[in-house]
Amino acid sequence: MAKMHRSASSGRFVKASTAARHPSRTVSERRGGRATGRSRSASTGRFVTKAYARRNPSTTVTES
Image (cartoon, rainbow, N blue to C red):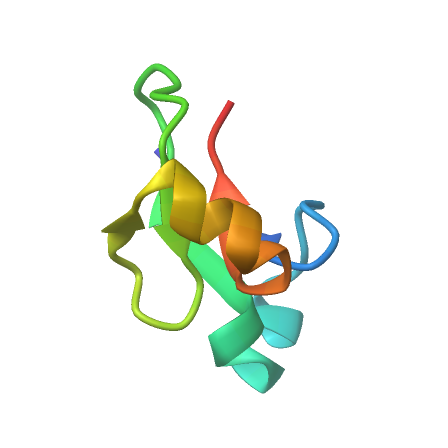
């Protein structure tokens, strides 16, 4: 399982160096399981509600 980094603003995968420069705007996680469809805060790493994700699209990542 590789560690993946995703930009919260664009939703695209980014390099580890980009994630290190912008830790509050990227989500880093080990992938290997199936998608959950849940949203996660880029700044805290915690799962958040759909309403929070809609209000804060630039700092949340929704797993699909």
